[in-house]
Length: 494
Image (cartoon, rainbow, N blue to C red; front, side, top):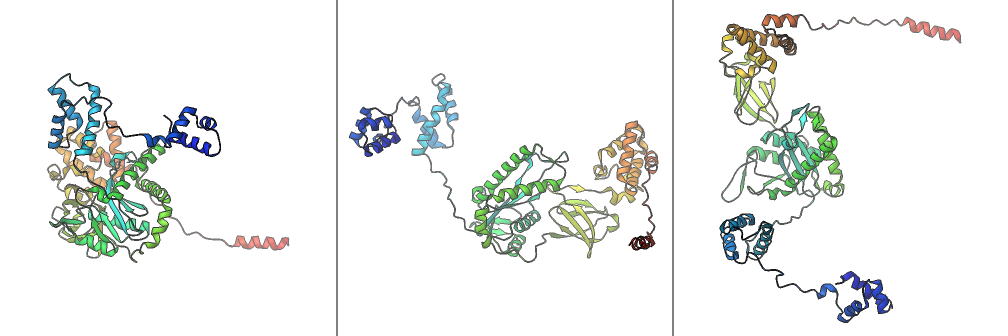
């Protein structure tokens, strides 16, 4: 059977004055075929009638009523499960290659009698109207910093009209990470959309009322008011309502993965190098959206004149254990602060401690389930006077700055168990008052030599390599007479 293109070619040649034989030759068909299509006056597609019969009998006809009954009871049953059950009921009746036949019958039945499916409604996006954001985990990309796995998230912001995107590295989905992410991304974009949409983050949404309205946290509403954006969220467990950023997550991580493969390594020297690499990747992706971005950019209102400095202030009191508790986590502080009331300014990655208006300390913030961060330098003055408190100390395991310190303690317990705690605490005191790196180097030397790392042995090694003193430079004296001699020589030559 000839196709439509060939018959149309034959008609064109006939209209140009060619004979039937000439037109048939040009269209690669016989004269008899050309005569037939001239007589019918129709194209092949107009002659094709839908087939109303099956070319072969349905092999599942006998069991089809049972199959339909199962689908009417539970439409989610897959064809593979039903095929396996049919083989259990009547072994040998069906061949393994018929497993592909049943899904075709399933698709036809569901198209005619199956339940209605959820429809995705295509949205019309207007310039400057909406931005969407969300957090996405990056662990699956296996990025490392100096060989150490780097567990992190990316806060991802997308303008739905132009698909211009911005990112910010973070480590949790806390409000501080959300606020810093929004601020950073808006300043990268250079404007604020009228509406900001995210999913139902606990950092932004307190609850969803019975009637369906969202109840936002006061801090999130303050953040939205500062940036002059109207907050919206999608329905719970309906991520496609935040579809632009969800799809951008997938595509962004796929592009990052491909770029890492081209790079030939997933390891970076440090966090700054990795951040620069990601930002450069985002810049190149945004360059492909220049046309729609040129339309959207003039519609974005300007940023607030002053950037928001998002942080959560928590009042804490230093306990008699020289610790504070901030958002379920325990942190040590210098013992001289015991009994004082401090202000903990919690940011996404750090906690700043203030005594009045004076900033006393800046410590890394812990995330996740309740944890503790104990710095031996904060308590070593008391511990060296009470070495017996070391072994039963609640945060005993936190007093080993590195594996070498742990190995030194284990060797001390092996060779001098009665004095192991005292010796190790004095080692910590030595590290706190001199240099932890030098003490660690001395421990490494003693470990390689198989020597017990007593306080005296380590002290002798550390003191045997004193830190070079800073040279005292005398003020430079300038003798300008040489310039007079030089000028005098020039004058004499003239």
